[in-house]
Length: 305
Image (cartoon, rainbow, N blue to C red):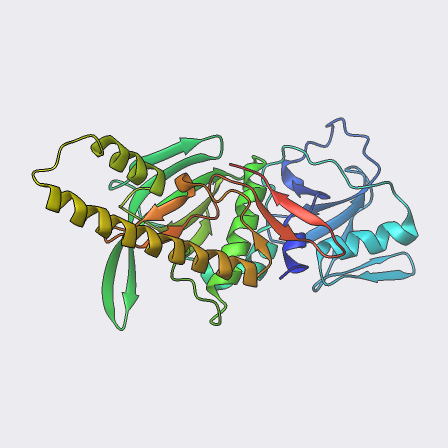
């Protein structure tokens, strides 16, 4: 996981070749990647250089030399090491910053069919990343159709946030697919899919709001008089027990992230969701930085959305 997540974010990727204008002014002389509509990957030295087809996972022949890499980032480094070429290619605002085949390699087990038309959709959040809607997701379980409420985040593929979204999907899939991790107190990934212009990330919908709103509501009610002193004392003790339970559940969620060497870095009350029966769900993919070990002491920052 530590190494594999590196390759979701490939700075040398320029997007679909068909969407790059032949006369576009770009004098970049670094080794860069293009994809074709059929999924084929091409390697070029500069956007207007000769094309070299990448085969397998991953291999490219340049002259008499054959270069390989388990990850695209490894392949690029191998080529640069012998063929020359400067540092990392600059990212550009291409049609899609997500190479779909790599995303499927890391999280293909959780790719789902696109949701039906969103007549039932209700916008529950907006931001720089796009929007989040509450939708109905239907799937077949043991031969029966089951419906559930989900939260769907829609991210433009041509935005830098799409790279962040791809990283989020990879992280959540790694957690979801590991049966040894207790995910009871983490927000659950339902699935993801790609549309023509957007990446869609589908998670369970938590109707109880977040812990910050809950605490603020308690504070607002604190000044209200109780019908009797006994009733107030009973409520006080119930609330203390509930708080102890919150702490235990949050710690459980953090322990699950630590298992995969994921640092939350913003464990604020606004990022802790509550079910209607006061069960904790730590939101670890929306509004805060997540740090992943990148190997050799490096870290990859998944920037705040």
